[in-house]
Length: 308
Image (cartoon, rainbow, N blue to C red):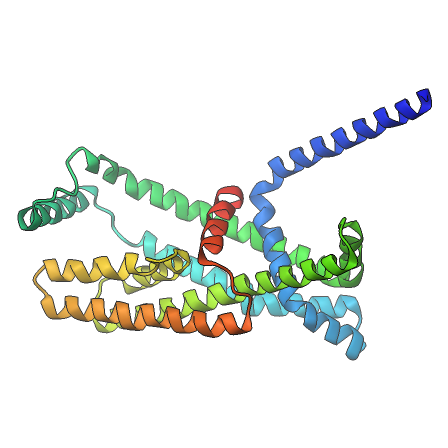
C-alpha cells in the first residue's frame, strides 16, 4: 500500500514537472510559434509531393525533403517576404504629418456636421493622431523582423517534418486518446481546415488586392498599393470586409465634390472587389472545407495576439 502511494506521488510530481516545463517553453518560445504553425501548414500542403517522390519515384527522404523545401522557399516564402517588404517600403515612404492629418479630419468633421448635424470627432478625440506615425513604423519594423525569423524557423521545421513524415504521424495518432475511427475523422477534418485557411484565404485576399490595385490606378487614387494591401487584409473581417477600405475612399471623393469619380469608386468596390469575394468563396467552398467567417476572423485575432 505504501509503495502504491509512493508511486502515485512520483507520478503527480512528474506530471507537475511536465506542466511546468510546458509553460516555460511556451512562454519563452511563443514569439516563434508562428514559424512552427507555418511549417505545419506547409507540411499539410506539401506532404503529398513528399510521398510521391519517396514511395513512387524511390528518391531518398533527405533529397526529396531538400527539393521540396527549396521549392517552398522560392515559390512561397520569397514571394510572401517580398510582398511584405514592398508594402513596408511603401508605408515607410509615406510622409505622415500629424497636423495635416488633424486638419483634414477636422475639415471632414466640420463638413459632415454642417450637412447632417452629427459631430464625428472633437479636438480631444484627435489627440491620438501625433502618435500614429511613430507607432506605425515601430509595428512595421517589428513585424518584418518577426516574419524573417519565423520564416527561417519554418524552413528548418518543415525539413525535419518531411524527412520523418511517416513516423511523425503514426506517433501523433498513437498519442491521441480516441478510437481509430475518431482519430481518422480528426485527421481528415484538421487537414481540410488547414488547407481551407492556407489556400482559400490567401487566394481571396490576393485576388481582391490585385483587383483593388488595378482599379485604384485607373481611377487615380493616391498610394494605390497601400490601399490594395489594406483591402487584402480586410477580407477576413465578416460582413463588412473590404468595404472598410473602398467605401471611405469613394465617400471621400464625393465629399470633395468629385461626384463621378466617387460613384465609380463605390461601384467598383461593390461590384468588382466585393463581387470577386462572393464568387471566389462560393467556388472554394465546393473544393475546400466550409469554415464560418467568424471562426477565421477570431482565429486570426487570437493568432496575432499570441504569436505576433
